[in-house]
Each structure stands twice: as structure tokens, then as C-alpha cells.
Image (cartoon, rainbow, N blue to C red; front, side, top):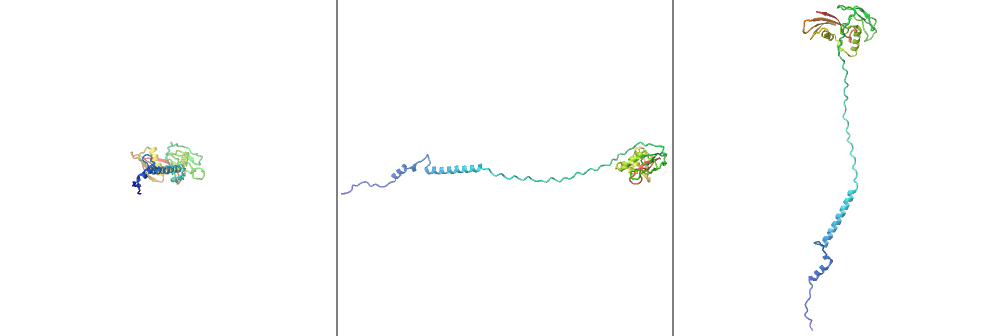
Length: 232
């Protein structure tokens, strides 16, 4: 007896393909497959974890920076301002001379008065106390800028304090006298001797001879006063 001639069945890819289509591996969401979805989910989870970590680190309080030290700048050295020295006044006083015809003692131990005819006075000093500011015996009565012994004494005291230094120079006193009292302009003064000066006016032919003496104190520091004037 012979077997019937049946058609031979051979395995083919069709059943397998049919099985794969019916399995879960064929699940798709839109154009993405399951592997792509898994990868996308892992990436999303990793990104979310990274965001959370960064947010947690950003919320932490950062350590405060140490304060910068204040700059230490030494103040510039200050130079003390120079103290101005008092300048002695050079105001020239021209009191009106007063001529006395009698000799009277003054409280400072000198005698006022005397002749005014060009000669020397006859008064002699009394017993004045010793000291630089006290009067010494004098020969003539002052005519200018002091007209009496009391005024001369005050002017000597002012000169001792630094005022009117021109009174210590007989030539300066002569120039001041002929300019203030005689009206000389641009005078020429020539020294003839100790305390004696010839003065001529620069704008006229007027000439005078002026005699000066230290009637209050002799020597350095004593003021010079006009005691005699000869015209011509």
C-alpha cells in the first residue's frame, strides 16, 4: 500500500511574521516604537533628576564673602602755617611843638624848658632813676617831633617796644622834618657832624641846617629829636 501523495509542508516566514504581529513587541504609539519610548522615558527621568539636583543646589545659601578690608590711607602730612610776625608800625607822629620859657621838673626826673633862640637850654636833669627806660640829663629842649620832655619820653618808650624805628636814625628824622614842617620836596641831606645835617630843597634854593640830639637816652636805642634849625 502506498502513502498518498500529499503536499509537502515546509516552514515559511509567514507564520512567524504573523506571530510577531500578534505579540506585544509590535505595540507602537504613533511613529515611535517601544525601544524609542523607553529611551525617551529614561532621558526624561534623567533630565528631571538633574533639574531637581540643580534646584536643590541653587536654593542652598552661598557662603558670605569675607568683607573687604577698608583701605588704610594715611592723611597727607600737614605743614603748619607760618605764624605771621607782627610788623612794627611806622606811623610818624608830628605833634605841634610847644615852647616853654621856664624850667619845670617832670615826673621822670628831667627838666623841661629852655631857650629857643638857637642856643642850648639851661635845664639840667635831676636825679632820675637808673634803667634803660628812664630819662638822662639832656642839653636842649626838643622841637620836633616831640615838643616837650613828656612827649619825648613817651616816644622813647614806643621806640623801645618796636614802634617808629625811624626815630633811631637822625638822617631819617631830618628828612621827615624838612618834608613835613618846611615843605621840602626831594630834599638832599648831607651829614656835617654827629647829629648835624644840611638839607636843601630839591625844587627851590631853600637850605637849612638841622641839629638833632638824643634828649631822652644817649647811645644806641635812643631816639633823635630836632633841637635847632638854622635857615640859609
